[in-house]
Image (cartoon, rainbow, N blue to C red):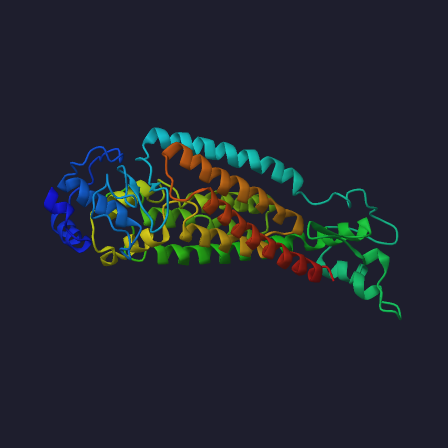
Length: 395
């Protein structure tokens, strides 16, 4: 053991590559026990370098002595980061059931107020159906155009360039509407199917982008053989979401479209969590047996990008991708506000709940808050885009 303690990090790497040993339980890291054996030191090298491919973290002095190295099994160090972070425990069936039950409750708990707050304004419900402005949702586009004409074109601007107050837009980034309820009702009824169809097209495009990102993530055949998380299953289940969007593209159906959007909001963060993806414990256990992670592309990138939790890079890219598509997916500006509830509920609350159940501590509170701010900033950009898109569509 004494000879092993004096070896360099490179010598430990050679030892690791030759032995391919599992990671055993380790000491308490208090420094009281100086009898660190060969298996403990080698395992410490495995754990400490798992998320440090540049090999900057020196663990050759032994786990119980090095202040920069891991103290317990499942704990590893980042360069110049204290305290150490842990990958948690193996996620068993009971823990999975507990987490996903809590996740479903959180999602429903945030979805209900989101559905109430983000509904479109009912200002046009009591609008007159006769009089100066005829409103009939059953008119064909041709008949409606001949009877009603283009609201803006019929009301030509005066010499000062201002338009009639009847067709003036009111509201802001939280929602737009015409000043006249009858005109708002006419616009809503005449363009509803077209907006559902355009949203379905955008949903198909968003899912195509997500599938491409998943293909890049699983470029070398996915996960370890025999593991319950299979990239083919994940991609196949993701592909099922195409069906309702394509159906609404062909024949607009608001109820089917709404269900497809809600399921997409639920599904996209789920694909980065176990059992649809490797947990950080599993990733740690598999990668800990290899010295050269670059030999297995999916494993190397999984370690580099921390593709085992919601704040991981791949998951963040997928969520940001979806958010940036929402201006084209959502039929009206009011609906896009639901993403705020999704960021807080499905991302932040799920992350906290998952860490509490599994004991995973890859990202600290500061990291999690930073990622929430990144998603919030992305959503602000999406709101600005949606506001401009709808403003132009109402002209």
